[in-house]
Image (cartoon, rainbow, N blue to C red; front, top):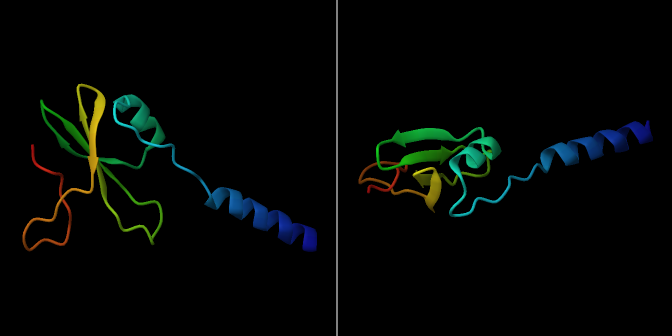
Length: 93
């Protein structure tokens, strides 16, 4: 019984501690998509593509936006809140 409890605890610990790979400026868009499959495209234009990172846990309420131009990451930020809004949006060009 004790051994099963230890194995179950270790399994939950390993699964719960999944680490996302760091995002760096200049990273290719294809690599970002592979490493962050839950990110959503929120804007696509001839100038840029913007992804919104979906938080992986309930405690993380920070929204992050990733801006790609010509297939490379150019900017990361938390967007901005338009007047009267409680939801962040990508920073305008």
